[in-house]
Image 1 (tube, one colour):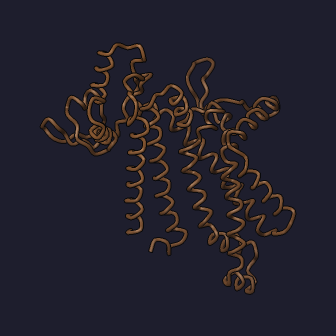
Image 2 (image 1 turned 45 degrees about the horizontal axis):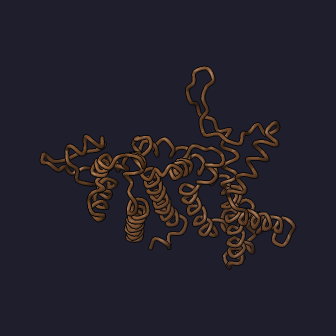
Image 3 (image 1 turned 180 degrees about the horizontal axis):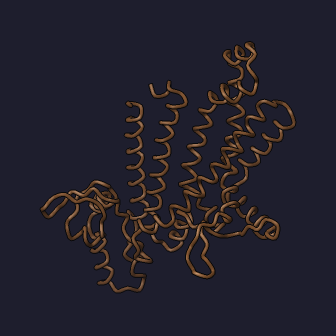
Length: 348
């Protein structure tokens, strides 16, 4: 419990650091009021926008207001609750109410939509893509690593290591372009896959969206190539080390089947570094699938963020970065629990 509590406090410190960095980078400099009303707006209009966005306050006050907006536990005035359409529970009868609420990520400069709603629309696509890519990388990567370890020195081992080094070295954006062009354009008549597309399509007769995973194959494989290569190498190295342990030699001497020893005993004890890689990469895929989503036209947080950066829509960028950071921290907390299950010595 103390181990998990320490990790939880560390995660809160990381999130606070991300909040400070995001605020300084995207709102600590410049004048966002110009991005809202454009360069040609009159001075009075800009002043009104600055007052409405609380940009006329000192920077430290602006940061406290921002922290109050994004915090799930905060203090808000009745007028502010209605104006921002805050959702949650509000306690108190005075001018200020204690709020246990959904974090308020403010509104887009360009569309004036609630940033939370925009991210909620994009988040399922990123989760679907990251889960599919990680499943592909985990299943194929562990299988390749085990085969390379038990066939050490063979052509299978050499081919696996060569392929994994190639997968690690190739940049994701280059692989995305190459795979999209080859399988989504040149060989499209044979693969039936498309260069671009999201996790839903529109029905030609009704116009309603429906789930379509046909467009998932290419971006998921592209996104899974690098973690697959890392997982394969880690599995091979860790399994080779585990197979040299005394208890493995004892099991072999007792006549246990080699398959049982490898899959039931050796592999489980070799999984700690692999789990670290899997959870770390999954968190990274959730937080950083920007280029792959953009190249394949996949509707997710990555594409939303790139489009917002192109339009200088800073509230959307800030909200996307914060949500990505929360996903990263949450996955790592879950990984700590998983470590405790795999190896109880860690949680002591």
